[in-house]
Image 1 (cartoon, helix red, strand yellow):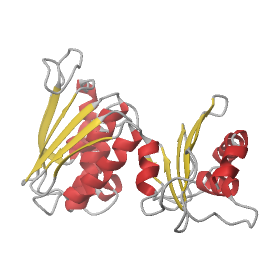
Image 2 (tube, rainbow, N blue to C red; image 1 turned 135 degrees about the vertical axis):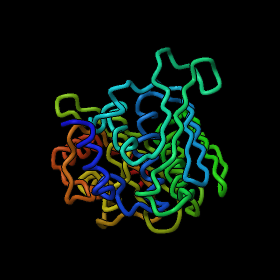
Image 3 (cartoon, rainbow, N blue to C red; image 1 turned 180 degrees about the vertical axis):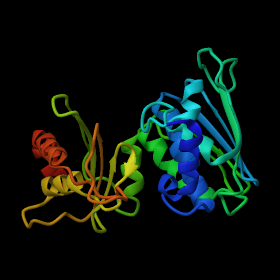
Length: 290
């Protein structure tokens, strides 16, 4: 399919690609999904996003540059392969696609991408800064050691979480009181089934249990197979999740199966089995934490 046909198909139904309406929140999702997150997946350790009325954006980062062919195609989830969506919904874009190795945004080979979202598509002249900030906070947990900076008229902040999911579970446990024991950390990879699982469990003294779950770095707000398997492993002798329990689970799988088109609930029995097997290894520690 020619680029002109791909571009027109994206522009006819932009909501399919940004998860909602082309408003300020949709603009934020566009920049996150097709600009910030690919840079992190490709190994960037410093990412700076500036947004201004227009809405204009500038991304500075220390990861690899996109190739010229990335700008006019779609290869979802692979490197800069999603960049065609951004190009289709952007009026002006100036990507840095020249050669050279990355070092840092401020170094001689740091990279920059600038553009203006198309006013024919987006109904506002500002990107929703709160949506950007919420996701930057999550991305800092999911990419430990990376430094993410957001600059906008409403918010200017930097996130850096060297503890990764340990920092995430501490934030999740706010108000639950001091930890009763050291957090339990599970890091398990099943090469044969192509599933990687990370879990952190913390036990405090009060408030109902809280669990966050992710698949491929995306929040699964409806939970699903991975979260259900973890909950089963954490049940106490009364078949209840104990008060004061905070847990985070992330799963990486090549081709996850979801319960619906929104992809907010995982429906994958293979993943469920891998999570249960991983938790069995840590059963004693998990039970003591719960």
